[in-house]
Length: 231
Image (tube, rainbow, N blue to C red; front, side, top):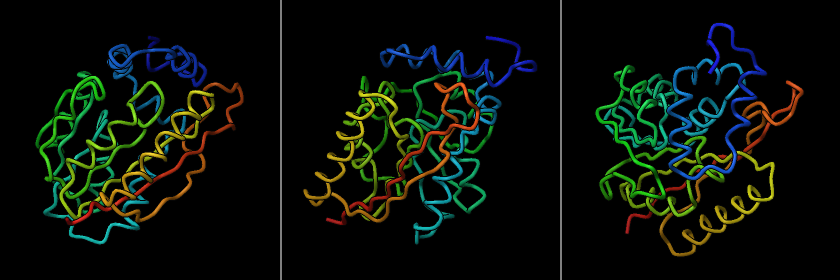
């Protein structure tokens, strides 16, 4: 990895393009390597998903904030919690597959607990029916976290609580398949009476398209908010 002080957008793009065809353990190791420059790199590629998702949640979440429990899944260095605390949320538990990312999150002093787990390969380390808000930003994509995690997010949510998710638009055939599977699962769970759809919103300029040489090309995405059934 190049010295962060001299790192360019092209350097970041080159590094991110190396992440292809990884399994879950390799992805975790890749994030361990990236942790040192992650936040600076995220700014360079205009990674706006945390800001957009927190704004989306703020617009649609009607409940108390000060006393509720938030589960931040794929929390990384804590970008989402940093934004949520400004809106009155105070109690966070974070989960991530990268130990080095969790080490960064520890320095924020925002989380009462941080838990290491490779989601999909390992169960989500969260208590059942406990969290008022469960949020996952940036990780619902091919080669990150399987669609099967959605039911685990639901299981961790307190009845009447909210699950807030974001998905980057695919730029590959495998990405298209992931999107189809994800949205089919979201609908299936609603049909089963597990939760109710509250809102969805398209995101523009989710982040710079690192596969494109032009710096003005961006990926879009979608945000979803569901409320867990009381029964």
